[in-house]
Figure 1 (cartoon, rainbow, N blue to C red):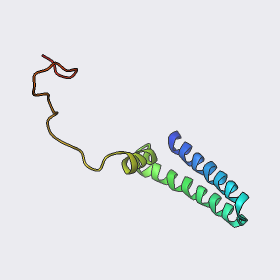
Figure 2 (cartoon, rainbow, N blue to C red):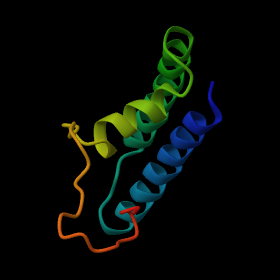
Figure 3 (cartoon, rainbow, N blue to C red):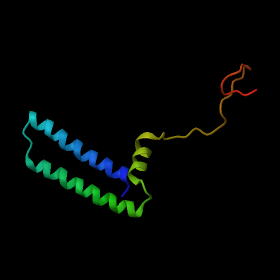
Figure 4 (tube, one colour):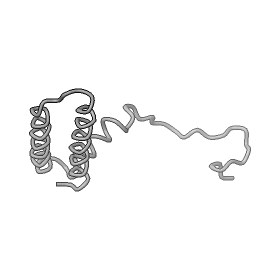
Length: 93
């Protein structure tokens, strides 16, 4: 398993337990909810181990960046160039 993927899963687990702890101060949360979070975490680890065997390394990081970071459309075409003839940082004369 990729170390970054494992770090994301551990961070998700710690964050969910902390969030449940803070919510537990305001409202009563049954212990079953904590058990569900632990079972979901184990399921995510097992699922990620399976996907790591069948997909490329860094599957989770690649999926997260594709889903949330990368733009949906790529602009293909020539780079814009200054037309007034002034020297700029990118305009080589």
